[in-house]
Length: 205
Image 1 (tube, rainbow, N blue to C red):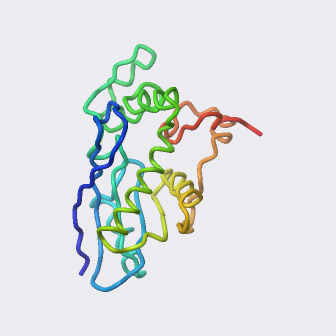
Image 2: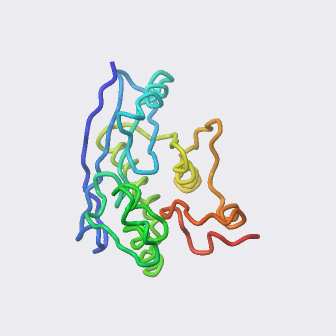
């Protein structure tokens, strides 16, 4: 039988709209008895929920234990604000979840743009959160995270984490690929996952 533990860890951070000095990272540890390989999994909005259980159970049956967590500013750590924009009159008609991550005028968009201006891109902060979660697993759960995967467009972040953190590998998933900003530009998409924005990310080579 699988067991899920809901944990919270504090992470030190600069003073930001998300907190002063220390941020909390909600983290789930889903495991079965016995020593097993540990897989890191998340989705666009953060940690796994009940709706993701079919995919989580698949990994458990393949011999993985799982950690899943909310990146700063997502999931349980979302900033308690709403945005109103004259540039995007439809924003006020969206539900909170969709308005929050709206790439044109949402609350998360404002944080992402400010993070670029301060030289600490949010995308890199998310990779840092993954490193913190991995270190927490090693020190407190006595398990080493060796594989990372994600649902939907979050697979882009999973790919970057695997490329950045030593000893981490990206689990190959059918019908999933990392996002290419050049493709978004060529497709002239007006909305896109704002949390994955990087300086010069849309440059077409």
